[in-house]
Image (cartoon, rainbow, N blue to C red; front, side, top):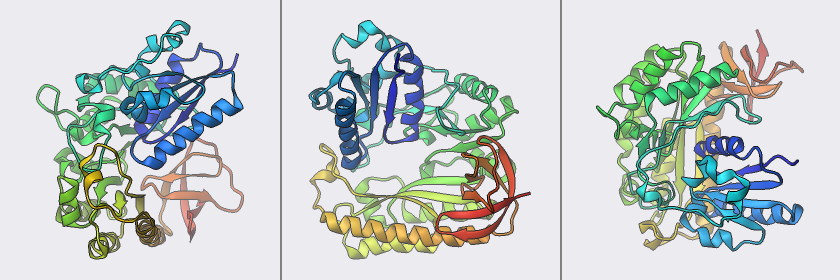
Length: 415
């Protein structure tokens, strides 16, 4: 029997959901599951290529396509050679979708905009990973002009505290020492729960109710929705990792307004300053789109200056990608080569900021979660490799001291 093969594209939420599907589909023979992403045209292209490759390499396998791209345009994916079934984002998490009988019942893609709750799922293992992801929120109620994801994920809905605690406790019992809270728009967690608790309250209660959890980390957060409990945890709780990844998107107020974001550059700059005031060695990352429609060279330079001025070391840079049906797709476009060139300049600025940040960590004592026997990430999310042939064990937390910096991160000795 061939265990199901899962090909995952896109975000950490998809990674979590792939493990849910792995559990549901465990009894199926000779199945390939392609969990797609719709954030960019490139992400969709890679998923289509994976479907074609799977059909070529395993022509007898049954291919199931799911994820955001499949939710938004199921007919397009169903037409690809070898695809047996297309499942929507709600259906893929339903155990009933993964029986032998269900595989022969055709596509199942419901109206995601009608979703009002998120079903709980207990995941105790993430294949090949030492860091676990836990879904705390699903969907998005905002309508940024460039983004198609709300139409793939539906409205925002929160996972109750008790369910999150149960999931984290199970992961810790399975040996995971670090958990990352993830979702589509995690800072909107709690808006649909009684009393509308903020995300920081979930984090605080989680750390209190699962004292054996060693490290808690957040995925991408909206700069204007970081609540006071999160700031207090950053200041006072050593188990709350000193890392913030900001959904920044641009460093130009004009572009941010055209994106219909909820923050301006001053808001993001205030977040960076406050975070570094509380934890001077905090790692800070950001998502940025290069070449958004109407972005001329002057507006791009504002974003580049923002990255340099705030020394953001961990950038996820994406050349703008038109998403059919979004308002930005109807705006005056920037030429694709210019988008790629601007993305390269932003990445270069981020790489320099990373070198500078890692240099400041030299000589410090760091705690590194090993992801292989020779490499891992520190609490600040700095990439670390062990020096001089030293070997550890994946999943162990090592105390190290950096002895060198290069383009790939830090080289460190075990203490």
